[in-house]
Length: 162
Image 1 (cartoon, rainbow, N blue to C red):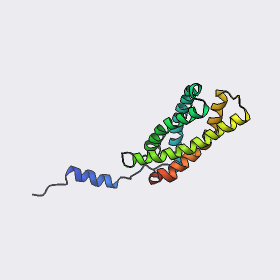
Image 2: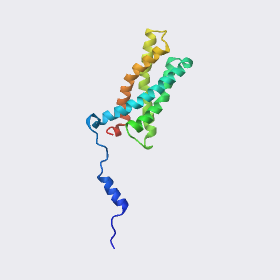
Image 3: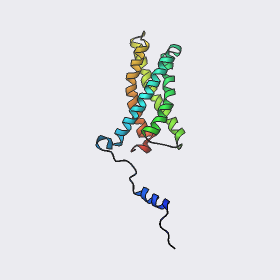
Image 4: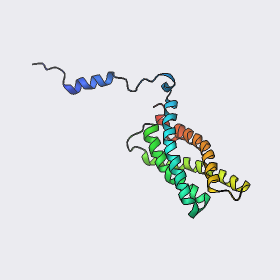
């Protein structure tokens, strides 16, 4: 007696025929645009957390150490969120390596934002915390562009087209 195809076989063949990715229209058809949008959302959350930590730590640690500690603490969150949300990487494969490489990216960001604080204090030794927040925010835009490029082309290059 011959039986019809079993349910798993039917589901497997149906799943193989469905497209692997969604089809986007307009400018969203470019993976880099979708990644930039998701990266921006992650960046807003992490920037707010970093600025809040900086403002909280600044009175006790000083400008440079507060900036460094805030960036390092939020970098772990940033790498995890970008890994999962921006570049759609799930699972534990290479997670530790991605986070170690993320520390290199944050070191670059730290050099950029730390330099802005150094320049600010060189021109204005009596700068307020508000002035420092403006300087780190503005230099953070440059650091963000560098970070996205490094994440996309180095750390998460395996997921560049998602």
